[in-house]
Image 1 (cartoon, rainbow, N blue to C red):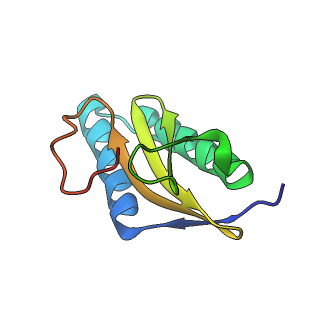
Image 2 (cartoon, one colour):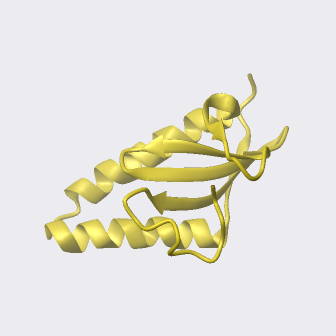
Amino acid sequence: MAKRKIVWTNSAKLELKEILIYWTNKTKSKTYSKKLSTSFSEAVNLLSQHPKIGRTTTTDENTRISIVRNYLIFYEATETQLIILSIWDARRDENDTDFDYT
């Protein structure tokens, strides 16, 4: 299967950055943030080749979810692109958002 071009929305980029900064500050080290970043990169690269790995959401059959550690990656796939919509900490309150990802 062909690898799709990976496109991150601005909000997904910001969410990833905030997650990595949070863990750097919490652990006082970049070690865990680097491991987490690698996990996200590996997952997204795999999704770009096999976009149907993730499960569909209940509200939109075009949006899928993949799990990386305690995080949910929301994405959509076209024939040529994998669009990363959001990264959500699964431990957060699902009502703490303006966008319904479920």
